[in-house]
Image (cartoon, rainbow, N blue to C red):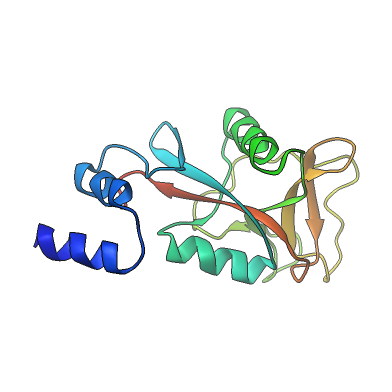
Length: 159
């Protein structure tokens, strides 16, 4: 079984170090940042919100949910390291179902916000949330069709 999993991962173009992390189940894959029991990765590819979530799903997670100031700062600094600036970046918060009723794409509790002053706007065309809103590095609601980088997260035990 382990051999078959290794062959599958290698044939799929995934590096051997990532496969070794899967087998150990205690660490994040190469290129991911570990914080507590979660793994995070910045993707410097400009995609709309839906496609960014799809890529995160393929990687075994979701767009990042943020539950504390520490996680917020870790995500912001990962973006700085990956993009060379605090680029506008998708996180997994959205209110597409009911305006003002925010949900995380991973289904976790919405228990932390870092909105920029005057945000969110109650506008049906701004249903997705980005981090690093210009001039204050906080959160902003934005149209989901905008193409920008994103951060994925997954539980370290789910790979």
